[in-house]
Structure formats: structure tokens, C-alpha cells
Length: 88
Length: 154
Image (cartoon, rainbow over all chains, first blue to last red; front, side, top):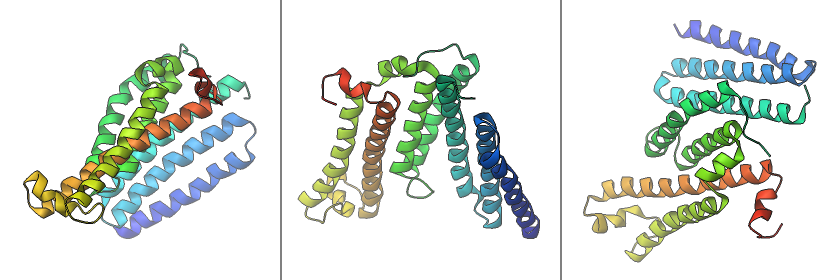
């Protein structure tokens, strides 16, 4: 069972690299913002998978909830900033 | 300077999320001693709620709920609670922040007094962190205008 989640976690880490490519080279600010948001969501899932592997899901779920909340607020703030300065 | 706008989605989402953010922040503060979190983390989550409010409803609406002056007072109260509990332990004959000595004052077992003492300290830390984070966000987002408003220098 642990092996299954380990493979799942490694797969998620590989997917993060694809999003990171979009963040670094992506044309325009909007692609980068979407990439950062996707990386945040994947990190949340990786945290939960780590929780299952270490058998402490109850602790990791607290951290992942804060992570998701701050990810959402960060994306909203970034969107507001783009709206204000007009760089798209 | 962020002004009030007509973003229905962001506004509704902020209004729906705000109570959950505050309850979650209080949970993080209260369970600081047996799960991840504590005063600092809970304060940051509270401040994040205010940041969401400022971003979605504009700075004027946020100022009505929490002005810069109130933030200054709350941060001082937070530090006062922290230092006050520490000094109380000193007065009762222990070291600084030696919560076990509070058992005489609270009429409970020393172990229980330690748990309650650290909870009080965490509440103080949460208040101070929340107010200071909020002030930093406000000053950065208004590019220092909020400092000039009340004539406190630049």
C-alpha cells in the first residue's frame, strides 16, 4: 500500500516539473500565475500523500488546508495586482 | 490602492470563506500544543483572512472593520499578554514564563496550569502576529499612504 502512494507521490513531483516549466518560460504573466496555482494544488496533494506514508494524515491535513487557503489568497492577490497594473 | 469593485465571484467567495478562515485560525491557536500550529501560525491565518477581505472588498471596507490605529493597539495588547504572563510567573517566584507557578493563582494542578499558561501566551502571540502582519500588508499595499494619513510621519 505504501509503495502505491510512494509511486503516486513521485508521479506528482514529476508533474510539478511540467508546471514549473510553464512558470519559468511561459509567455505572459497569466500563464505563470496559472502555473503557480497548479503547483500549489499539487503540493497540497503531495502533503496528503506524505501524511498517508508517515501514517499521520490527521496532522498533515491541517498543514495542507492552510496551504490551500494561502494558495487561493495568493492567486487572488496576484490577479488583483495584474488587474491594477494592466500587464497581461 | 485597492478600490471596491464589482467582482461578484471573488466577493461572494470571500464572504463565504471568511467565517471558516477565522474558525480555522482559532482551531490552530487552541490546538497549538498537540498538533501543528500555534500562536504564530494562527495569527498568520487570521491576517490572511483580512488580506482576502482587503483584496475583495477594497481598503475602505477593511478600514471600517480594522483601522491602522486598532491594529497598532491590538499588536501592543498581544505583546502585553505575552510579557504579562511571563512577568506574572516571575512575581509568583518562578523563572520567566515558568507556567507551573500559575497553579497557585488559577487553583489547578501544576500540569494543568502549564497547559493554560501556554494557551494564554499563544493567544497573545496570535494577536500580535495578526496585527503586525495586517499592518505590514496595509503599508505595502498603500505604498506608505496609510502612515501619512494620521500625520505620524513618513
